[in-house]
Amino acid sequence: MKKLKLTLSFLLITLSVAIFTLLSWILESGQLSLSALEPSVLLNPPSISQIQIAQEASPRQIRVQDAWKFVYQKLPDFPLANNYISKETGKVDPNNTLVARLIRYHVFVKGRPPNYRFDWKLSLADYLGVTADYLVESVYPGNDVLRSNPLEGDRAAILGLNRSQRDALVQALVDVFTGDLGSSDPKTPAGGKPEGRSNSPTIPQSQPGDAKLLAP
Image (tube, rainbow, N blue to C red; front, side, top):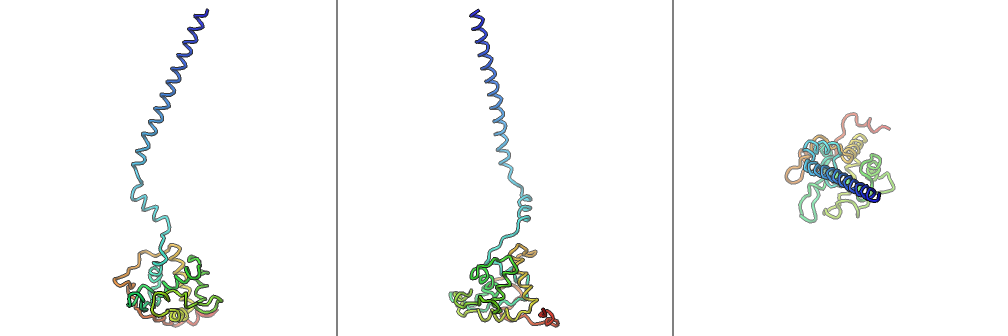
């Protein structure tokens, strides 16, 4: 009787070891098969077309210092006012434009967000002298790098715009900072001047019917 019990115990132990070994082998083989698949996945990066689609789906980001180029692309007749002489080089700095200074004033001096029409209208109101935050010469963009402060010239340029032109400027600024940059990048030839525009800070000439645009 004791021999029978010992024999049964031995058989149960042997069977248990065999089942445990079999389960271990199944689990290990499953892990190996999964790990064998992982390198193949890692070695297949997204295709170029997939990357391009992802880039097109996300809004394009631009630097604040480059935004003025896209504004002039949208408003090719807007005055450059970029005939001021640099303190560092002693030459005219063609990249120090009216729109570039307006953007720096709006973003860095006043700390206003660049993607809302209302905030841009507040900055234009500063130039027009109808807000409590009047322009301060000592902190106006360009005062630290140009031989002459462009503040008064810039104010005159903004004052010379009619309501329609100011609205177009505000819309162009909002479009640029919200990702609507147009179909192509602005072309800047040697010397830094946008094509087809003069260095002269001339004010856009009024057109027939502009007076109606000033009516409330």
